[in-house]
Image 1 (cartoon, rainbow, N blue to C red):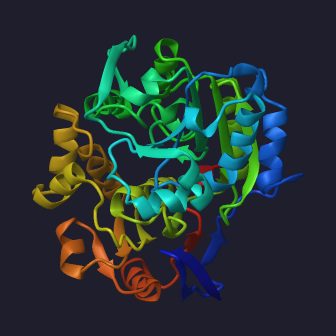
Image 2 (cartoon, rainbow, N blue to C red):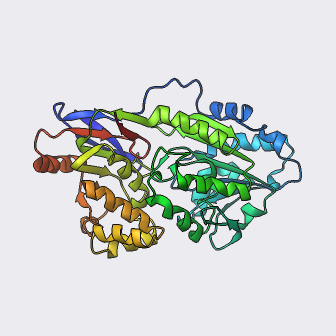
Image 3 (cartoon, helix red, strand yellow):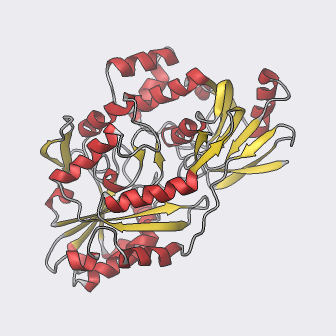
Length: 415
């Protein structure tokens, strides 16, 4: 049987015999009444735990809209025009609005990338800027000691609106909500303090209220208020199938519930081989981003099995500290020991890959050079077919294969 997985902006095909196929982990079937711009418009008319946006903002106020960067699939160019309509109904002119791309610890955008994210019309009308970790204001600390150091234009605004897409996050539980602020527009030191909690037991994908790291993120809004959020859930083709708007906690929680209905998928037992795609561009733009699919795949593979990760990673590793850890560590075990002794942002993803490697071998099908892939402790393959055949040689010709076409989104659960 032939299958196709997202790889950069195209697809990569491969074959798995019917006898070997354990299944294809696709989203659960749910009823979707509206989608796209129509669903976004509905959410703005029916905010959760909040007044409508046009009733919150006042003429003369300075508005900041914080949205996702190029590494996220958030469809800002669809959401923003409808959000701006609401602001204009409250007599907020374009000149009083600023759009901030939440970079977190990621690289800055080119001007063309900014234009791509918001659309040419909005880019030409409204000031669009990247967050800057070097231009932040210290506002205090969370109860767990995380410094709240936030990008100055976001702090200076009269109103803060946060956009984002909701998907599983391997230690924050879910993306979206307050995450646009922390880590979105925070300093590296603040992000590092928060992310150091990833080693705690309940800091894991699909966990919200019991997650100490997520609670720490949400505490940020106690000191720097978030006036309104608009979050979306995307289907496997990156279409908006659910939008939630309103209160930064209540609306986000409803979005997470919907995500669980769609993407928490039960399997009876783990597979020998898991073939996983991050879902193509932009989720496989670099190893730093593609790691999320790898982390979800570990929940579906047996101990001693093999994960085949198909991810272009055409921009390389994607983050300088992560790159240092991946290229200078003497072993995978060293990474795990080092992250436990002294947490370092960027190194945390290297350690996360090392922890997956403790459970299963990792084959990488990418656009990276083979020698470089070996240097980062992964096993390189030119295509998925070659990787599967090698996996059969290791595990036996009767090995069972599970395919995860949307690895960055789907969360396997052993039933």
